[in-house]
Length: 88
Image 1 (cartoon, rainbow, N blue to C red):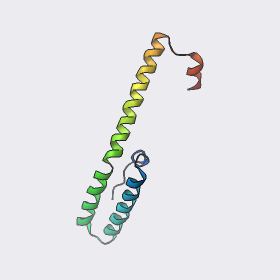
Image 2: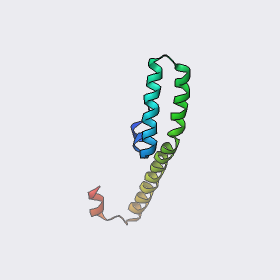
Image 3: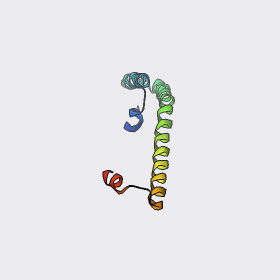
Image 4: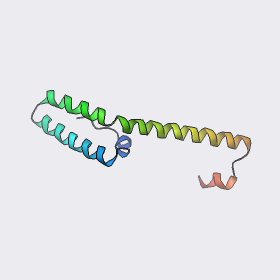
């Protein structure tokens, strides 16, 4: 079974995380039984389940990029307070 990244797991809702953990447990059990034909199906379900969290991670990254761009434009224009800059 392939796990998703820690960043993606951190963005799963409680319900999604519970389902993810249950599917991982089922997949590990099936691996011990050498039922790799069924493991494939479980892995596909996991891949579908984590798609919304991957999108949330992408959106966080895009927002961070927008915030950085805004900060740099403000800094270039001289609008950034030096005390605020020291806090970061």
